[in-house]
Amino acid sequence: MFSGFMLTGWIAATLVAVLCGIVGFFVILRGESFTAHALPMGAFPGAAAAVLLGVNPFYGVLLFAALGATGISLFSRHHRHETATALCLVTLLATGTLLLSLSGRYAQSVYSLLFGDLLGISRSQLLPLAVAVVISISLTIVLFRRLLLSSLSAELAVVRGISLRGTQAGFLTILALTTSLAVPVVGSLLVFSLMIAPAAIARTLCRRPGSALLLSVVMALAVAWSAIALSWFTDWPPGFFVGTLGALFYLISRGVSALRHTPA
Image (cartoon, rainbow, N blue to C red):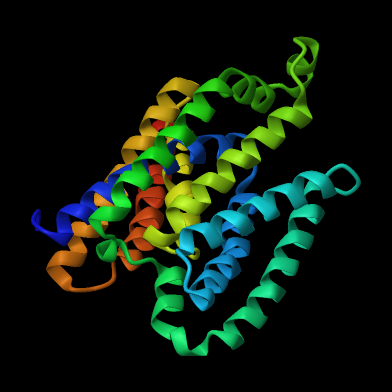
């Protein structure tokens, strides 16, 4: 379970889980769950286009995720944020419909991009993945105080001279990078699970932001590692366990929270 391609899968899952745990914390804190769902789905057509052209899917995902983030940022200036996100999503998905019809010969590659190919990550992909994860986390650290303050109190952030629009643009950039890194590993349909479930668990169980951030990362790692182990023993897709374990752990956290608040 820890040799050859499995070890590569463990390392890739660890890198992506740490990043998703950190970014997911801010997704939940800022109420950006729909955006976190829309960007991976909207970026998938980019991966399909890359497969069609014989290019590394990462570049296609990165391009379309960047286009989605830019579109959401621009449209949000004139429309409600949810409306802007929905407009960008349907536009990208419509493009994806065309690309999928053109890439019918690449069914296996397209399937992998939808549901991930965690155990198909090659060693040559690890270094670029690690570098990109470090860059994404570094950007998050640079924007950490602004992201945290603007998430908790937009009015106080403005008083302290923080640009809400600039902070939002920075956050969307980080989210686009995270999407680009995670889609080839866990798939565009399951990135949402790895970002949202651990962070939602942390938000349910922790009151302090620092503790919630740490627990979010720990839970993302727990989901990813458990998914790989269970996939090894059952020969079922890791993506199935990523989604179901995330939901199961969240339900358990809600039960624990309810017990905490039950009068003795």
